[in-house]
Image 1 (cartoon, protein in one colour):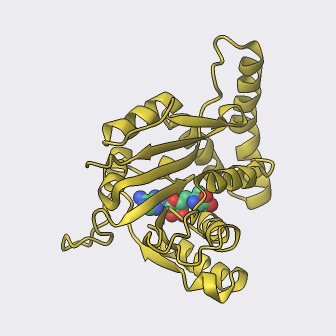
Image 2 (cartoon, rainbow, N blue to C red):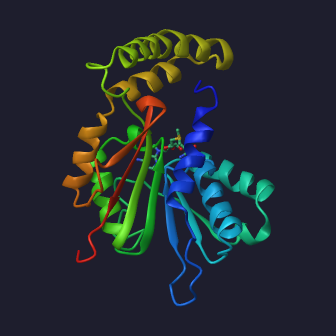
Length: 243
Ligand SMILES: C[S@@+](CC[C@H](N)C(=O)[O-])C[C@H]1O[C@@H](n2cnc3c(N)ncnc32)[C@H](O)[C@@H]1O
């Protein structure tokens, strides 16, 4: 549905975070939590970047998802796609990102235990986004980074006629073509209708940035990076060093 752009966005997202950059033995191994990690698309890229590109085999990634079936597919894909060394640096956690706790209140992810929290095309689906952001803040160590890749809004359509045209074409494509293709290809119109509606409902880049700030994070510059004219955007925030 994205004409393959999602792969380019994911590659860009991971290389911009550049996990495993420090191979300094005095720096503890990086602990990455990939939330709503589903079948492992982001986690596998993280491991490749850290272990192969940055030659840092100590970087560890946990894939967390609320859906055990998605995690099961992730486990199978890891076994067939990743070398043993990378499989050993990967773990899986079934958890709701809005509350990383068991029913008895014990933490599934300890406070200040994570260096990098990633969420790609997941947060849009969460029932309570502010709670998820507060949990991200809790589990990150001071200085740790929150990074989100998500569908977003076409940038500045009011002042730019080309962007307005692009926005109109994109809305037409998403609201009429995507559900129809979903029906024809997957026999499932409703899921694809949900996809476009959830994208439309998701806050604008500025609104989401402000939610990240409200959760306690510091953002740099305007707080986000538009991809493909704003069809998707990357938001990043840092937990203050003195938190
Ligand atoms: C579209 S998939 C994204 C998967 C992966 N991050 C990617 O980019 O390919 C969305 C995922 O969000 C998960 N999800 C939805 N609500 C969640 C929640 N409250 N906590 C954790 N995961 C959730 C779903 O189970 C699903 O695997």
